[in-house]
Length: 491
Image (cartoon, one colour):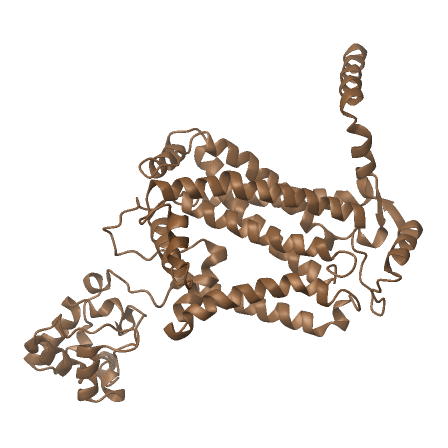
């Protein structure tokens, strides 16, 4: 045992004499930080770095099997899920690691913003953090595309249609993104290069610079009410605080970072074991249009916003609001680099975070059930309720068949069953006249297409006659009958 220890020490000394890394690493680990920074609020940056390392390791292993070609990408994921031992678990770890990394980076950005850690002298640290957030979202988006299933295929088509709206250069941008006029093998190759080489390279470079600046400028001290940041005095005051209350980062402060990072890793493993990997769903097929593609969780809010936006303002919102938002984040430390840091003295910061959190939460919830999307199997699985056929003439009953056979219930519901894209039809005759119903059916309007060419005159007449009977009281006869039976049974 002593010989093994001595031999190991000799090997370490041999490498240290040539590399000289030991002393700088020990110095970095033991550098002093203000005692008030040894808090659970300061653990998110380290956790994000640990998850990034996890993503790199699992990504390298996945790349050994994944085939970035249009004909083999989907099959290679199926092979990983079903033929490689623990291949499904590896994919699940990578997928859930991506979600956790996005969440932790977002939380870290919010914590830095609320703690005023973007102020002098950490302006550039914050700006680099903004780009790290964008690159993290870019990694999540390109990773979804690499699944190359139905969701990825049609989601990419939607993204291309949005990009095509860029004035003057929309067409060339689409060609650059897709690698040609259609979504094909060149598209997948480009996204594979972005996901595996370009974005990770930029991410690692900026993470290294970000960590270096944290070490050089120190960890932002705990904000206190009334302790203002002034460029003329802040660094002197910080060094005095560091000398007065400083503790070594390892182990006095780092143990909380290590404990939180370990908890996050266990959470990723638990989600991977319990929920499994993301997709892939059906094979990408441009001939299958009966699909409702959804992005991954952290992009659902954008999915919902785009669905609810009026067509007239879609393009300005898509291309102006993101630019303004990113510009505001970058300019924030340059325009507000001094002053109060404590959250109680910055109500505007709390309001901004609250509004954004509520908005993202609401739109994400809306994106989970897509009320604007037709339910493509509604017309086959949900017949017209019997209560809506009572006391109807043969012509009106024929209209009910037209409503069913023409798939109107993909978008409209009756009796709580059917699509949610259009308004419910239970009481349509109480809010529209017969002429208005005819005009809406034949010409369309709003988000409803016209059906003038899809219906012959007799079908139109029957459908309108049936719709004019729907005044919101169709369930009453059934209710009255139930009451009658109950009373007779009681007597």
